Length: 371
Image (cartoon, rainbow, N blue to C red; front, side):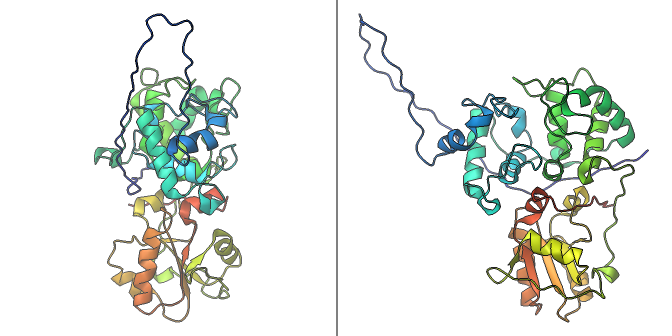
């Protein structure tokens, strides 16, 4: 039996207050014809306007889904059951390999992260769901048996989601569950809630009364194990590199990074340096269980909130490049690099797109294990 657990924490937790105003007017007691009803156009630049401009073509004018490209309904409250965080990341970074592209300006899209936040908050309010900070219970890992979960998936899910998680199966327009970006940015509880509750108003049924909780947990564990690729025969969970071996390719060449704003490199530059087996220290500044869920291969989990004394003692101050990345996409990495520079480490850089951007661009990842 192979078990896999992780916990997800952090993200953007916002609250929203929605209000509605109604207007009444005098009624003609004997109208000669029915009055025309003209829908008021949303204010330019508002979340409602952004939805109609960028989302309605596929998700439907009223968020009903399946208008084009089998885009899912956005009216279901369960989409927002684990805060606004999963939907924000899906909107920002898209789902590579599917018709859902990235809408974040850093990824070539039309919206800033702030505008995406506002859009998702508007969607949540329209679905009757307030956003909130997850409780401790929501942050607990969901353990499961991967092999048993694969059997349950084959018997109950593959007909709609595809035998390889590619989506749009023979019997239904299921979501692509084998998408690395989706699995890298959606917590276990988000996946479990969708299976338990289904997606009302869509072909996705609620499995609460069709599968046991153990079977559902096993499916979640199986899906999580596919974060590194659907065709993995035996998932190998990497242990964090030891501090004695934090330098990747110690005998390799020094990378030639071109920094923007004096600190940022993009995913293409980092990938080129890794492919060239350059001498580099790569640190993941997210919480350790984010690293366990999926990470850039060879990176060391060094949470932004850690004391770093042991880590700093292991970093040679000889010009070796230290590259930091996080999820949000830069805040924790910026914070860490600022600390390193204050301590006299000038050859430091931040991955501009963050981890979600790295996966959205299709660069390789690994799955880890934190005891």
